[in-house]
Image (cartoon, rainbow, N blue to C red):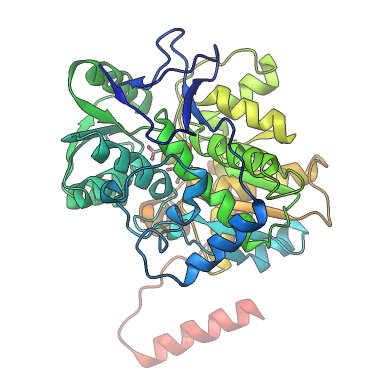
Length: 449
Ligand code: F0G
């Protein structure tokens, strides 16, 4: 079956490996020639950068629903989808925050984070989902489906519900946070917890889409990548089109890094920005196939692994978009780094202590930045943006375990938790007694002073 036809003359599908330019894609979004991933390209696109910047700014004061979306506001750089098919929850429009305490810890001034957890379903997935779910709607699909570590499924279920489509979620049983699971239930998805890991869910889904008329919403779907590009476009607008020296992102299935890198390259080609930031990708040590691919094999191959990390969002051993990510890593001159469970937990609490917070997978960015500083890849005086991908409330279990000191028992990190002690804030249980509360307040005050 081949049904996906980009409707705008300028948007063309192209295989990232053999360069084939099919007029349409099959349901698995793989190249019919060589089986690799497809991407959108825009041959002959000739846009005036000053005019684009001005239109995008003007739209900020518009009440039109497409203009109110931080994704569709940048529609000149997206495949065209007729407005009646666009499903939007006013995604994007996410804040750029100063992380003052984290900046001091890292020895940088300033350090900023773009918080993609401030999207409607509380993760960066919404920016890609609005475009891909709209494409499913345009294609007349009744069912959409994804395999997920929890955020894609939450986002997909919401957008499917808004577009009156059914959604099928495949998630690894016991390996995603309750917050994310509860979202897909409430948004009405058929949620299947499979007794496998994320990579096992992907395998089943790839078989399923060949047998059933369901629309695949994982990030192999190039519409997802196009939508996720807008995080970088919006970021550059927030920075008055003055690119930072570094952008740091978590790496799981590697769709997001590919999308942000693609946006940077497109913006450079369109002369929206004059130079490229270095895009660096951080993985958890227990789920580091891309790190190993780059460091051990020079990017020539990726060896799938059985992944394990408490940052469950990035518990992925066989990332689909690794070749796309490698390309943007090389093109921007970025680095790849890995961080331990302890480093992730510490960085997450530090981001929390700045009054911002994020889910564990997002905190790999700060943990990775510290390592990149130590290695001299990032230097004092350079500007750095961390991309925080998910909201603090996505995984409250992790946070509570951290503060209670229950995160590491029985693991190899158990004996090394002294460094996180000062960040732990376990709740204090007291009698309902004024004197007891005052004593707790005084004790806290003397600890702080
Ligand atoms: N951060 C969060 C919070 C995520 O949910 C994910 C991926 C990533 C980072 C990594 O992004 O896969 O594009 O490299 N979550 C996917 C999911 C896999 O199913 O929700 P990536």
